[in-house]
Image (cartoon, rainbow over all chains, first blue to last red; front, side, top):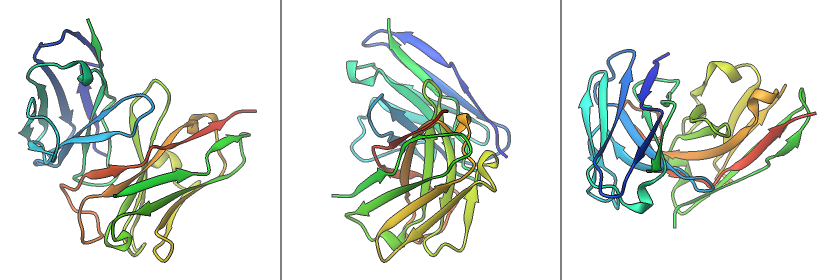
Length: 107
Length: 125
């Protein structure tokens, strides 16, 4: 199975900050990496797919990059509604594993 | 509106069974593979199982193999997860999710583009 190492596990930041979350996979997955946002009591939402493609309707302050085994999710200027948990997920091969998540909290 | 609605969660004793359902609407259900994903309180998301459009390929995470069975009824636009021999480690919020690719299989690079709001499963004596 492909192992996902996501960091940091938690992060405190302020509105307006630039935030970077990283995800590393145990084997080459090309660009088969997706990012999701989830908030308590809500369904997870797709942010980025294929490592760098912004899902329709997602604000442009979110961006993704990487290929192979190293990936990043960047939020260029945090907004109040961005405080949530973010998870990466590989779709290269089953089982379609997720990272452990990064909880983004208000400083 | 594309929508997924899970049901069937509840409190169950260890060793017992539960069947989750997911009702789909707003899209051509049998064009898409589907997934079950769970979240243990305070922890991250865990992919549990997936099924292709015609049920010819079923995939499971190792921790549920032999205990959980995914299935679907395309005539009812419904996805199911039969969970047997439940343990406390299965306590989680369970989501169903739609696969992105419209050819009904699993393809590298797919993603889960629509999620339900989930249903809670608590395994406790």
